Length: 98
Image (cartoon, rainbow, N blue to C red; front, side, top):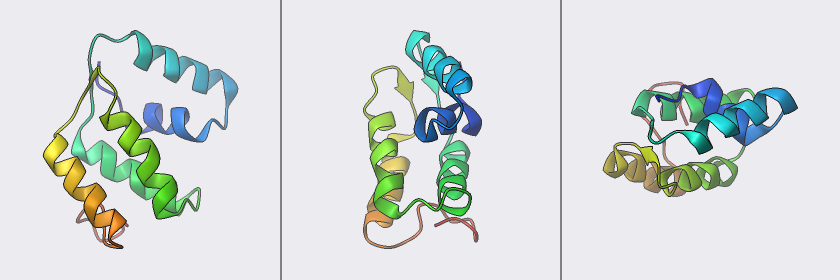
């Protein structure tokens, strides 16, 4: 399966019990979960702009996602983004992304 921003967001913010349960079930039961870099960038942007999350509160769930055995992502690029985020830079190169 390919996870979009909304599926990942539901598992992180847990703001709707039914949607969170469904998203977690989808991710846990999938043999493989593909996550695009665009999805990660959108996730970072939504967490920051809509939920006011700080860098540490954004980095932690991203690291958990990267360390999940069934998740497939461009790890070098995602880890580079996390390093930049940790250093106070932008996770991605979009103008509105942190």
